[in-house]
Length: 113
Image (cartoon, rainbow, N blue to C red; front, side, top):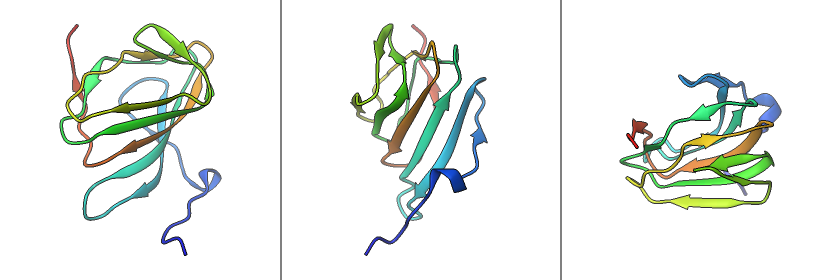
C-alpha cells in the first residue's frame, strides 16, 4: 500500500521567484527534506544557470519543449544531476511541464557563466 497519493489537479500552483515558472508539490519527506514537484514553465520562461548544494535533482519532461543549455528536449527525456553540479540555463519556446525530484532540502544558487 502506498503511504501517499497526490493528484496534480488537487495541488495548487505555487509561484517561485522566476517569472513564468510555477511548482506544484506532490510529495515532501519530513525527515530528509526530499520532495517531488511538477514544474511548469510558460512559453519564453528562463531559469538561470544554477546549482543545488544539498540535493541531487532528476527531471522528466512530461510535455512541451525543455531547452537545457541551448539544446531542446521533448517529452520522455530524463535528466539526472548530482548535488552541487551546475546546470542550465533552462528555457522553453512553447512552454513545458516537468516532473522534478530533489533528494534533499532545496537551495538555488545562481552560477555565473
